Structure formats: structure tokens, C-alpha cells
Image (tube, rainbow, N blue to C red; front, side):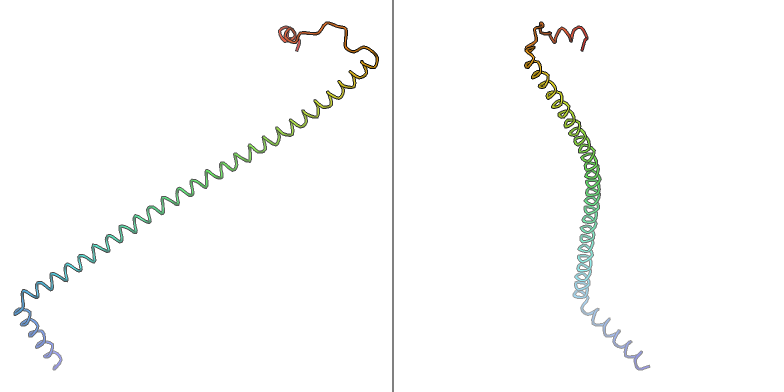
Length: 137
């Protein structure tokens, strides 16, 4: 019972002192309320900054994924183009071998004709343009 009575006495004394210093009490309560509102505003600003940061992070992640997909597509295209270039190179090498073989055969034929005194030929030269027009080629 003593504790209960002491609490009653302390609360009466507190209310008495507060009523005597009502202006100061209101100022203190106002300052406390202002500090709480200021802290809440700062927390809201911090949360807004965090959300903005997370949004930017998500956008950057999406851009990186898009760039990775584009890079993969380009890598596949480059691989396809490299295959084409390799095949064309092989075809050019085969064509070069064919031309060298034909050139060697022509040189041997010319040598043979020179050895048999049949070079240069005694026929009238053929105009390639007339062959093209006639469709002989």
C-alpha cells in the first residue's frame, strides 16, 4: 500500500508543478514534438533515397542484362561471319590452286608450241566482246 500511496503523491506533485509551470511545459512538449517530427521527416527522406537507389540499381541491372544479351547475339553473329570468311578463304585457296594449275598447263603448252615453232599462232585473234555478244561464253 505504501508504494501505491507514494505513486499517488508523486503524480499529484508532478501535476502541481506542471500546472505552476504551464508555459515552460508547453514549450518543452512543443520542442519534443518538433524533434520527433524532424526525425520522422529525416527517416522519410532517407527511405526515399533508398527507394530511389534501389530503382536505379534495378534499372542498371536490366540494362546490363540487355547488354549481355546483345553481346551474346553479336558473338553468335561474329562466329557465323567467321565461318563464312573461313569458307570463302578455303574457296579462294582452291581457286588459286586451280588458276596455278591452269597457268602451269598453259605455260607448258606455250613452251611446247615454241619448241615446235608454232608460237605465236598464225590465226586471227578473237575479240572477247564479240564472243560475249554472241553468247558463246
